[in-house]
Image 1 (tube, rainbow, N blue to C red):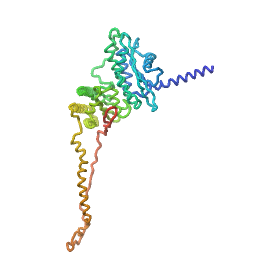
Image 2 (cartoon, one colour):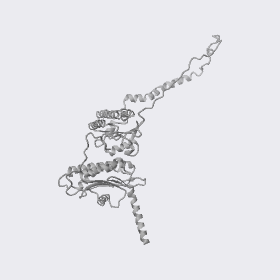
Image 3 (cartoon, one colour):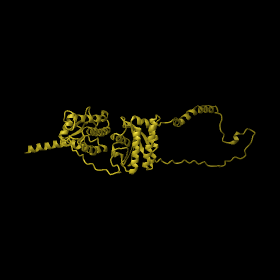
Image 4 (tube, rainbow, N blue to C red):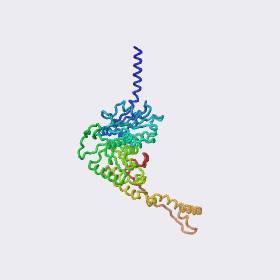
Length: 447
């Protein structure tokens, strides 16, 4: 009997030890992360809202698994095994697609993805279409986000940003393929002819999604009419100039990523896959109300041509003072106008740059010093030749023998000189500085 109890206790201990890694993992809806380090507000939204809603719309199950260990021979076998073992799939035919990523622990305490450490697995019924074709479509879309430099373990924050990009690409590719080749209401697909009921959105309802559009107002500092007007203007400028122009108002930037306000801004930019064209050209400004933090991020070759370091500083002068006065609508309006002006000049080949005269006045003090240096040397040389000349303290010392003789000498008070210095008031716009990182450049500070 004691032997049986000992064996049972040993089995229980082994079971508990095997459960510890699973307890350390984090689930973001249908996104499973064993590293427990890739989470963000964007990833949570994708796992709890974006993918489940899309699964209902398309009639296929969409999931993501980030693993730190596997007992299978390959990552593709792992993906297929997990799909079957945990009953993934939508409907009786268990149709679905998964992104599976293997992250290996490093000696530095972080995680890195080995070469070929990810795969796409898809399962479609024969009536619906080709599982291989769906998997290839998703893989092609996701592949740019799986570049080794983003998963090499040097920066886990970059891996987190790359994961949100990969999930967004996966969702878009699955939607495009299914709606084009085998929509759920098509005859013979074996899926319900009636799509899931979607609640009707009332007219003129205020935006409550955290998904980026052009003007992102989670702090509710704009009226709906103000937001609608600014959103339309930002969309028009972005499409007309082929460069995304974005703005974000949030309560606390730390809710949307890790690091400084500048780092969170570029994480938001990449995580939401903002920008236009293959280079994803764009500019975004983020204001965080909690500590009145500010950041600007510029990304893409053309965007950085239009907004170089000097251009970013001049652009900042157009709107940051408005925010110091709590004029949110006015500040965003001036920001949009200035972006439109800067991009128009860049398109004409005449971007905003430091002018000749601004350079001249900047270096004028140094030029003046260099110009005066030879004159000063000549004066010193002349003064050295007057060593015998000395200033006398008394006026009668300058009189020649037999000349005027002073009988009385006295001092008379005439006046006092008083100097006053004006105390400068601190600027209401706060201090800002240049930044780099996230593949682009920008500025950050307070307002």
